[in-house]
Image (cartoon, rainbow, N blue to C red; front, side, top):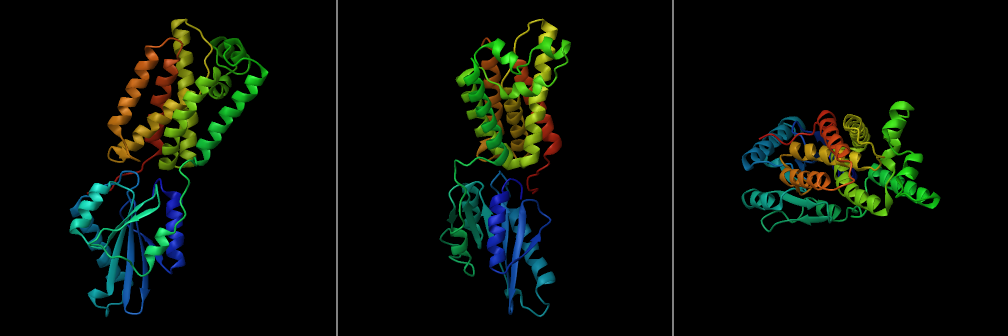
Length: 338
């Protein structure tokens, strides 16, 4: 299941401890856990809807029916009666209005809210499923403030670099930033110091610049890393920073308007672009964020940048384009087909 790796591991461990076997279904974002005891086979169809997966009622009915047929034909001995198969559907995350509507017409459905560890069981649904309820309600939750691996590491590196440089001099000085790794066309093109495109990604002009970038980065970066995974996130981040730096360098040479460039904003805009693609792939909604909301955010951010003096807007543009394209290439998570 894309984007819910830790939650999946916890649920898999719960089923394993309770003697369940697993079977990866042909439908994306779904997995079946089943157990056979005496003359009964029962299974739990886990649907990961945390990142925007949506099913029509008809599609859900079709999947559940095919799962039941598979269990009868493959798992359950032929002499078992049809009543010997029971299935519970566990929907993780997703739109609660849709889940409530589905529960009104279908039986055997529970909803699990990973953000608060709450198991939602409507009145017309089974109150328990062979002792599974207590196990689900006791799954330890990830603290809301905890950041994914590389989002936390990158943010920490930026803060540490800033503190060290601030102790050495003034980070608000363009000359000081250039001396310690900021990107400037003459240094890159004449001296061949192309490494500055990378080092500039970890330098910031003052505390306000750092704070603004890190708040946005932690907010959007954590979502992207959960959606696409650690390695893909890292690749998207650095490719975006490089892409933004290269476009910034090209435009400075093209216009003759040279300036010292520094900051993580190119990579951060790439993360925003990458997350936009992930949202689009999940039918326009991911972790409560819509594609329309993302595009409005991008438009307002670019407008603010181009209407404000002293902002490296071409770095932002290069970053967001690179991040979007990189995410298109690297991330192929798909929504459930109807």
